[in-house]
Structures are given as structure tokens and as C-alpha cells.
Amino acid sequence: MTELASDASAGKPAPAAIPPLDISFVDDPRVQKEAAAEDYSVHVMPRTWRSGRTSLLMAFGSMFSAMFWLYVAATVAAVAGTVNAVIGIVLTGLTKGAMNFVLSRYASRSGLTVALLSRRIFGYAGSILAPLIFAATALYYGVFEGSIVAVALQSFVGGGDIRLWYLLVVAYSVPLILGGVRTWLDKLNGVLLPFYVAGLIALVAVASSSHPASIALPDMHTDLAGPGWLWAFSVYMGVYILMMYTVDFARFGKAKDETFHGIVTFGPVFYLLTYLGTGLVGIFLTATIPGVLGTAGITETGIVEAVIGTLGLAGLLLIVISQTRINSANLYLASTNLEALTSRVFRVRLPRIVWAVVAGVLVYALMLTDVLSYLLRALSWQGVFVVAWVAIALTHIALHRRTEGAAPEFRPGRLRRVTPAAAVWVVVSLIGILLVELTGPFGATWSAPITFILSAAGYALVYRFDALLHRPSDPRAEVADAWEARIRCHVCDRSYTAVEMDRDPSAGHEAICAGCATASPSFYRAARIEAASTHIPTPQQAV
Image (cartoon, rainbow, N blue to C red; front, side, top):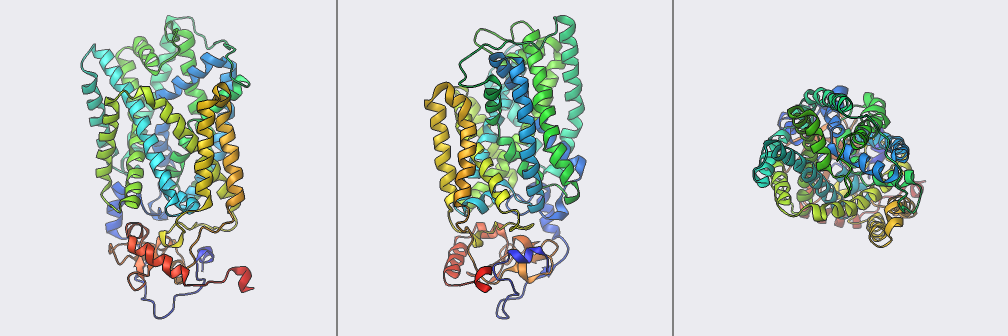
């Protein structure tokens, strides 16, 4: 019996009256065929579907090439000065790198998505907010980055209805995410990465030959309610959404690559290259090229115009390449989290290709609105929720590191509806939003750190309230190795790893996979009734 057996509710094989499990030790070919596009979006990631080291590095490396990183670094430096900006960026790279080291190892070992991890922390119903916020944020970033390509195309061509350029960008973006991470996204981003790096080098070289090169931007001594470097650090906390991106990508990692991915792919190496490396390019453009820093400040379109003005057609290609890479990740994760959300809320299970198209339609619809008038505020609010989620997730991992083993409980029939952690998440997030909206400079600098600290402390106070439904007859305990064994689901007739399988008390205790269990209200009702009528002694009671 493996360590997974200690996670089982029963602790011993199922009674003889329980139907026998249909067990195999090879992947179901039908499941693998679906996984080529679905990537186990509503299932645990089996160890046989993990990506190679380079493949995962290239797939997540799409996050490296956003014009947003140039823009945000330049904006921070224009307010707080280059020195404060660099200090804040380095501290961000080191702290985010350390936190993502923990999150990536956890995701790799457990195979869980953000939605499934949130289910363990917040309960079966309490977890609904996580994929909703994740999907909405990914869509908003898709709008933001997609708009940059449209504006660049319109500017270079010299006109045309911007709505048509928006449509063109969405039309070519959606097909790029129809494949999975290891079947397409890794290859796409691997091919485009050298062109992006070469483009940045050419941009710096040509701009330096045309203008006096500089990265010096003075501290404007704006009232920031704290040191400039702390304000810069807090600004970057607003994009903690990359922590959620990390979890959904890191579950593809192999056990032997955990340390490499924790340091390089998702860790401090990635963040220092992304935030500091590309950020310095943004600061350089602002300090070197006249007109980037205007009287109204810096805009991302201003950065775009500087790139095109410096490199011409090559600059346009650089923007298209950079935004195609980042938006492949934005739309991919938006579609997978829309799938997870709707399967839970509406009990609807549709192919991910449907959700890819839906994500594209939503992005285009948002582009047609006056999106910039509310986008940044919406992102700031969602950013508060994400900061709180990250703090709670990290605290959960730390407090349960010795009890959960390699398979945390996430199956619908083994979890309560809502946990106190859900209340902590919502209440602290509302406090953070109030700080942002009502306290001016103080909130701009301190709301994110305060939200993080309160969330971690609040979860530490309530985590002992048991989130689990204790039920007998656990398939995890009925097999020798719950990661290697595959069990056939009586609903979809497909075999999934035993880690995610449960017994269905609404159907004679036949085996059921996590995906079908999520889409079955009768299953969850029967599971709660069974848990209420069953007493399973805790280890202390057994002693």
C-alpha cells in the first residue's frame, strides 16, 4: 500500500458487498485521445501525461513575452525612479520565485488545477469563485494584449475600422489554443521565442544608435505613503495571477524535474528574466526615445508606437510575435477555467474547443465596449482576490505538508460544501478592495501586502475545521498504487487514475470519476447522506 492509502477515508479494502472495481494498469486510449485537446481540465493529471522539461519550459515561457512587462516597469520607473523600480522588481522576482517554487512542486506532485486545489481549500461549493476569477482575469488580459496587436496593425497600415482589426486578432488567436499544452502550445512558443529575443536585442541596438541611450528616470517624489521601492513591489503584487498560471501549467511537470521547474521555469530565474530583463527594456525605451513619456504618463500603446517607430515592419512583427505568445496562454487558461466553472455550476460538460470559441467571443465582445474605462479597475479588484488566494494556498500547503501526501483530497464526494476558509477569502478580499478604493496613496501601496498578511493569518486560524466528508469504501485504498491503477467509471465508461475515483452511493457504489461526479447532483446528495450516517474514527479515536 502506498502513502496514498493514508489519505483514504476507510483505511481498509471495501466490503464484499461493494461492486468490484474494473482495474487496469494502462491508460485508456479514449482518455488519451481526449487529453490531446482537453489536458485533463476537470481531472487530476496522471503521471503518464506529463511534459518533458523543455516542453513545459517553452509552454510557460509564453508568459515571458508580454508588452505589458515593458509597460508596467516603465510606468513604475516614471513615478518612483529607475533605482526604486529596479529594487522593487528584484525583490518581486525573488519573492515570487520562492512562492512559485512551492506552488509548482505542489502542483507537480498532486496534478491539481487551481479549480481542484481550491475545492480542497474552500469546499465543493466554496471553490466556485476561483475558476471564475481566474477565467475573468485571463480574459481581461487577453483583451488587453489582443488590443495591442490590433492597434499596432491599424497604426502600421494607416487606418481601418478598429473593430475589424480586433476581429482579425481574435480570429487567428482562437485556433492556436485548440490543442493542448504538450501537443501544440509548447511547440508554438518554442518556435517564436528566438524571434522575440532577437527582436528585443535589435530594438535596443537600433534605438541606441538613433538616440542617446539611457535608463535614468528620476524619482518624482509622488506621495506614495511609503518608500518608492515598496510601492513598486506592491504594484507587481497586482499581477499575482501568474501564481495561478503556475499551478495550471506546473501540474504537467514530472517528479524528476521538480527542482528545475521550481527554480527556472516557474521560479526566480523566470521572474528575474521577465520582470527585470524585459522591464529594463521598457525603462530604456521610455528614457531614450522622445515622446514615450508624455504629459499624461505612459500608455502601452505609447510603447507600441515606439517599437514600430524604431524598427518599422520588424517592430510590428515583434509585437505580433510577443502578443501571440502571451495570448496563447491567456486564452488557453481562460477556456480551461470556463470549462471547469461550467461543469461545476451548470453541470455541463462540453469539449474544450467549445470553450475556446466562447473565450474568443467574450474577448471580442469586451473589446467592443469602452473596456479601458473599467478594465484597470476590474483588474485591481480581481488582483486583490488573487493575492488573497495565493496567501491562503501557500499557507494551506505549509500547514498540510505532513498530512496530505502526494494526493490531496479534491474529490467532490469527499468534501463539504463550504469551509471557513471561503469566508476568510471573501472578507479579506473585500477589506483589500476597500483599502484600494477609499484610502488613496496608502491603499495603493499597502492594500496588497495587508491583504496577503490577513489572508494567511485568517486561514491559519480556521484551517483545523475539517473540510472532509468521511465516507467508507474508498477506491484509493482498494488498489496497491493509486497513481498507477486505472479504474473504469460507470458513467462515462472511461478509465482514470485511482487517485480521482470514488464510489457512487447513488448508483450502488459503482466507481465514478471526478469529472462525472462533479456533473452529478444526485451523486453529491447521496454522498452527503452517506457521510452523515457513517462514523469513521479518527486516528486519535482509534488509538
